[in-house]
Length: 253
Ligand SMILES: *[C@@H]1O[C@H](CO)[C@@H](O)[C@H](O)[C@H]1NC(C)=O
Ligand SMILES: *[C@@H]1O[C@H](CO)[C@@H](O)[C@H](O)[C@H]1NC(C)=O
Image (cartoon, rainbow, N blue to C red):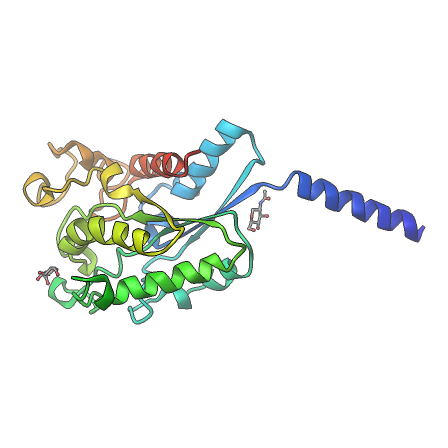
């Protein structure tokens, strides 16, 4: 009796490890959590799961959404990811791949009507608190089974000061700062450029409209504004589809 139970348990263990999915954790804010989408099937991690299921068959990959609305990378931000409910869940497990997309809430500043999260201190990496806390997050994630770590440039902000965010920080600072952070942290992969994938351009100050509207002539506004949702920060369902595709491509899957 006892020995057959042990044998059954051993067989189950072997089966489980042979069929184990590649585990992907998506760390981020409301753009990972899926705000302004029509619901969970449209969240980018859900759409990434669907894309990987379609490509590799169900069970090959397991994508987990660790998005926390309003979360900052900076430990002294108004809502640090480090203190949010997903953080202990993330660090309780090991991962094969971890994708990090934070910074949008760090770009809030008083001049834009938000909390003073952004310190305007990132002219060099050495003085940049955001880069320091990013490194600390990377080191934390590295300890979770040494996963492949991908960092991402967040989507563009389509209207200055919306949600108290500074569009210069999101649209000009991050597209060069996130690659610098990637290069400065050995072994970190990417950056996956979600800024460009969702229509961000270097000359955004002249190219972007003041904000996206339903009849916007700026084509990439369709990633943010249509009948389903019109927001200047969070993608709509179509934007989340583009985001999921960009992550799949960025992961080389
Ligand atoms: C995927 O991973 C999560 C987090 O570890 C786990 O809770 C869930 O059961 C897994 N799903 C499948 C289908 O294995
Ligand atoms: C936004 O950030 C830029 C770059 O640090 C800064 O020059 C600008 O004054 C900020 N805008 C506001 C409205 O505070």
